[in-house]
Length: 320
Image (cartoon, rainbow, N blue to C red; front, side, top):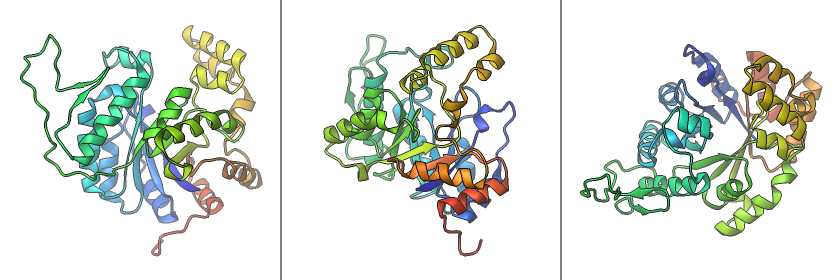
């Protein structure tokens, strides 16, 4: 499995990009570095900075939020980034949730599955530049033809010649969108996927591959080994129904510390790389039994960064 480094600059009040750690990860042979966004620092700008300071790491978003950008804007950003770091960019997309979509972006939360499908369609059209971009979709329509428009829009072909096969990954955990990821995307950024829960996704993975006429070898699976997603549905899917309800209740009441304390230890430990050297190696072996092709980790020290590189069998750069 390939090893990715996750950055949490999105979660801080002040922007602090750990460049030294990223550069060490590159020297140690890590495959990728991943950023994210919610309603603070954006996911794409830090990767542009890292593109200028690295030469081997893949640069991916896990994720860029669909509601934050029209699909043509997302394609422009990732296409421009890829021009600065050829062959190293991954366009990771995700829906977020209704609270963020409506509360932060002022967009309606409607038909999320169809929105994601059509969004990927438009992004692909821009990357491939085979014809002027147009979509007569159920949710997205290019050109705009609504009653509030002037009616003068026409399909446009991107000026920049972008990488036509720039990889698109989808972050999702629900049944329909997992199927979508394996049908139309180059990679899956799973929510709630661990060695203990991998079997829960097998049918949806298989159905998506059949729908797309593909095999598992055609889709990367970039899982996360040390940060669990606390979406209620993800917890319920893994059998933590009661805990999910209690956590949601506490969080909604503003009792966030109690909500965090209510997360079961078993939920946290399943798939996490926690413990001494021997235990982490055993947990890594469990990940190797899944369909994951890559694991994103968030080591807190250079020592942990080096340990994980050794466990994963990373090949250091020749001048490291």
